[in-house]
Image 1 (cartoon, rainbow, N blue to C red):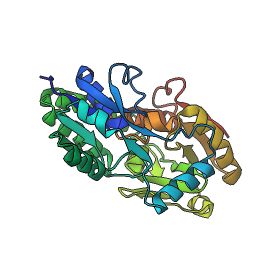
Image 2 (image 1 turned 30 degrees about the vertical axis):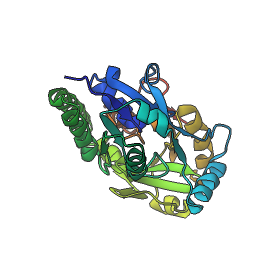
Image 3 (image 1 turned 30 degrees about the horizontal axis):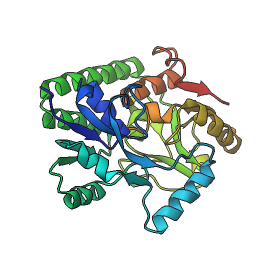
Length: 297
């Protein structure tokens, strides 16, 4: 079908739209939509935010906390630009104020502008729910068959990993989503570890993550620690993983492309499962693609 005018206020939603073959219908995106590489070629950037490159994890955390405490926003909705696009459907979220603009802000802006676009909020907390959001986007955009085929393919790949690691010892795996201060894995991330043949520890499955202590990670006695900081690709993850190695000297420390494979709830989470399985069971599954994971310690 296609033909709708779509605006994505989430990098993960942008990836879903392109995976459904609807990239040409995408008229608006955010400044963080970097996949596929053509995501911002023809679309207008309707959400901006602070450029945190060059800031340390602690500095970014301080900035986020100060903004939220003051009732400020981490993202700026370019409402006039959004209205000018005359969208039919806007994809947004209420999952995390740190990750994207909340849907309530979008609805308020649309009401103020008199814009009649539908708003679909995507708020998955588990891997199954992520796959369900793909189906939901497919339904709302008129391509349910494409969504069904995509999800069937993703489930088939998950089943292949499950078969490859079945009956093997399951390493204890901790995922560090932020290093200063430390945050453990939450939402769907523990599901990725389980699907890859590991046992998640120091985790918050199906729940929002929250600040913890390095003591929790140490006491969880992980065999493997995956460092996948939100907002960073592999080079940033490697840099932060070196700090984690100092805190957890008894575990194997791996950096992983967080934004590409772990923290964005879209189709590439299955790439993440395959990459994590390659770390945990290298003799059972193919090696992860170059540039996605790196052993640090």
